[in-house]
Length: 150
Length: 160
Image 1 (tube, rainbow over the protein chains, first blue to last red):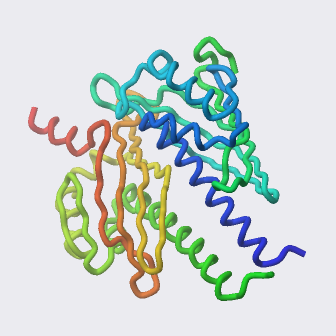
Image 2 (image 1 turned 180 degrees about the horizontal axis):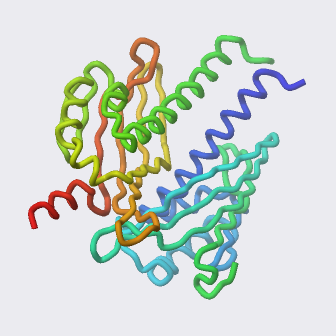
Image 3 (image 1 turned 135 degrees about the vertical axis):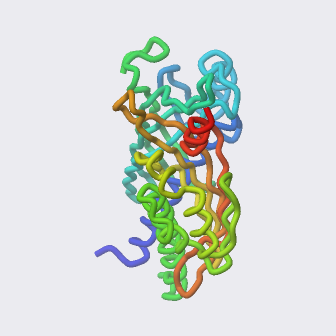
């Protein structure tokens, strides 16, 4: 029998994890790669079309190096829309999936969907709050992005 | 030791409040897409403030009048296909006060192309207040980050 407090805790955890997704999107859009990398656990891993990187320092370095080439877009000229969060909490661990839409500004100042993909996450409760243990961030449309097929 | 009932009730209340505010923004989008300006105005507190590109107004009656004037029947036809997508909500609650920041995206359809097209996107930045037991908008600031509105397109077409 699950206690009322455990049921409440589960809902609070889902809320904190969706807030983590919002912090991820915000730090990415604002190019705050230090804050972004700290959303990962000390041994947390990011995997996607750019490769696989483990730990906040390596993840920050990946973004510092790729932001100019892979993105090549100034802050304010793009944004991430995150939708369809599906979060499953099991004690101090959780798994989740969500959809991401990458929107960029066209020459005539119109927002345009540039890329779409999905996140597949493993999360852990840490003393600092919920953090990514592993986040896969592959692109689904187009099929081939940065030379990687998904 | 299990938490006492008052602590649990306060934690539950916070989640219920966040959920009600999230639903308020979904209703907000539905009202705009249906040109239901009375329903839209009703989302505001008695002295709730709207700060938008199309104008500013305080209180539901003035807000409804502003929308009827600026988004009236002719414009409603021009924006017949209107689809607001609400996403990326960040909602904070402190007692009877709250704040929210959400991303809005606006899709429509052009005569020459059946596919939906994104034409503008931006943020809503809100202060909220519990009024008579329901969450209402105390201050609603609309900013656009990209694109242009169908009103501007209709105005430009009429002028050309």
